[in-house]
Amino acid sequence: MGTGRDWDSFFDFLCNLNPAVKNAIINNSLAVCCKVAASKKYKATGCRIHSVSYFITQGGQKGMVRIEGLQKLTLLDYPERVACTVFTGGCNFCCPFCHNGDLLPIKDTVGQWSEAQLLEFLHKRRSILDGVCITGGEPLLQKELPVLLRQIKTLGYQIKLDTNGSFPDRLEQLVAEGLVDYVAMDIKNSLERYPETTGCMVSVLGPVKRSVDFLLQGKVPYEFRTTVVWELHDGQSMLAISQWISGAQRYFLQGFADSEHVVRKGLHGYTAAELEQLRQCMLPLLPTAKLRGIA
Ligand code: SF4
Image (tube, rainbow, N blue to C red; front, side, top):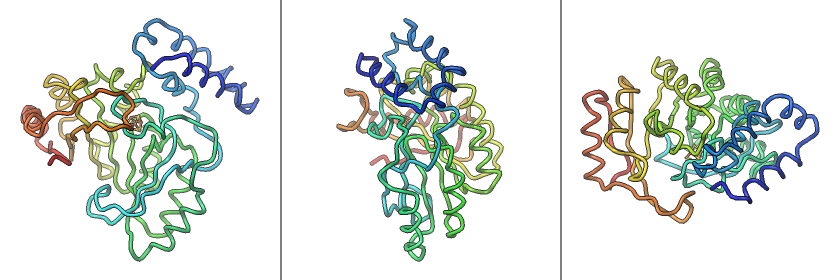
């Protein structure tokens, strides 16, 4: 939440930046960031300060892709593939229901895995794995991602990208270059409820809508999915989602399960029967809607 500690981290982050980067920020968007962050409206949302850094990171981080984790085998993350999952660090959103809170801070540091270590792992597993899921955090924050994906492609892997949809230009470039084979994009909520569901007061709706429009064109196989939380979603918001993405190839409602890692404590999921009711109300406009991961 918007505590003094968050502000301290924000200004520490600024002070530790390379002077050239700092100047660029000051000249470009810092004034906008601070104006937004200091406004009563922003503070009233309880958003974390690092969501304001969305402006700062539009340009991306320099150097290598920050890789914070590697799940060496998954049969669930990539449809019909035996895959591994790569977790990149940093996210421009701060969804209250996020289970990856440790991955969210945007840092200008190297991750737990180097690109060389990842590529060596993938080289050795070529006979076992056929897919690589790139997730986060928000992978498209990583300016150097295309370079890494090209190298993964040369090893013969299919690549799935998870994204929150806030970097449509980067998404389109990856698809145009054939660097992703499947895209899973989060639809966080109805357009009206995006700010409270993403922790972002800054407008992400324009970029998110562009990503949706792009994927709906079907230039790459894709899915949309929503993690449904009792405090954030209701019949009205799910109906609005079905209107927004009507015609989508694939759409999944995912149940929310609380855990000690969730960003905001005290959230609740719907029961399987309640989720099915929500799905039913979406079906007239979104016949592809399915439940996922519901016992
Ligand atoms: S759920 Fe995804 S988009 Fe939201 S904060 Fe977590 S990593 Fe970022």
